[in-house]
Image (tube, rainbow, N blue to C red; front, side, top):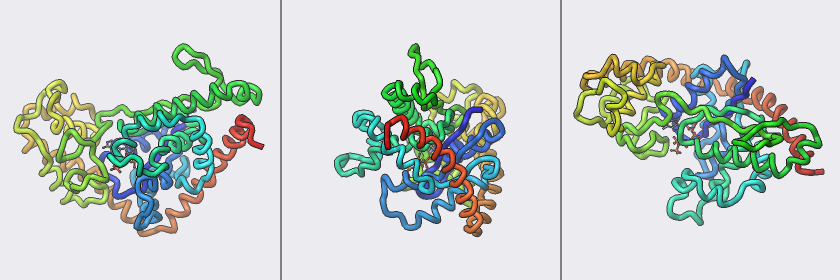
Length: 349
Ligand code: AQP
């Protein structure tokens, strides 16, 4: 059975991009696979070390997981720092990965900005920790938004180099499987992870600029729909979303060169589990003045129950802490087994 791993950082309010790119996919995968969903608190200190209240942010992301419909009994929900094997495997991966690989990451370039010499070492090594998060469970599939594609390619590079560097030892201890990567046969301890990115809204864009991704750190609150926004705010933000003056096209091809229209149609499709073509077969030819109220109604219908349940859960931190404790014990048991093998493979006494 394929094993799923994914995570969300406890940095600020979750938005519709996180919901469609991550949470909604997490929920959909629960029936088919074993899932491990993590609140990646160690990642959140790479860009900004000091947070006002990291503990309550961690609880709030956990509440969003549960409110979206993730089942923490059938699956595993926990916070990264509670399972120290993530950081331990990340150290080993720091020694596998090359500095040049990290320097090429677009997220590092974006977040470090011009003053790269002054960025934290943790920000540079972020993808190494992300690879460890996934591979410490030897997970095979990772549901993420499109922005994480490059990091997942790097995870594959790290797994491949580890498998090749330690091929002899992996064979010796009998813990690998024979796979083929491209044309190359590899005796792999770590699997080659597959990203699960597809869907009508793999990259939800800002409501104010169709060329920028919807993001927690955008200074304009009107650029995103937060999961904590009430119904009136959601409707107002959709009403004020940037659009062009033309009517909606009847075919998906007609969305080319119209990033704002494409974004809103993609959001509609993802929220209603339809394709963009299907949405356009209903709304093609209509003006945004007709489409936006329909989108607002849909968004409120989908997000309001999540919002209400999140609020209820946030008022019960003891319950959230118990979920995280149980999840970290179960995750820790799996991670410990992997690290026992990794110690053997690397030759740590
Ligand atoms: N706009 C988006 N569209 C689709 N998916 C998205 N994700 C984020 N933004 C979009 C997906 O959400 C998951 C969790 O993201 P994260 O918390 O690890 O951090 P992030 O990607 O850095 O989120 P932000 O909002 O963009 O934060 P800032 O502003 O700090 O950069 C991931 O699966 C991500 O792909």
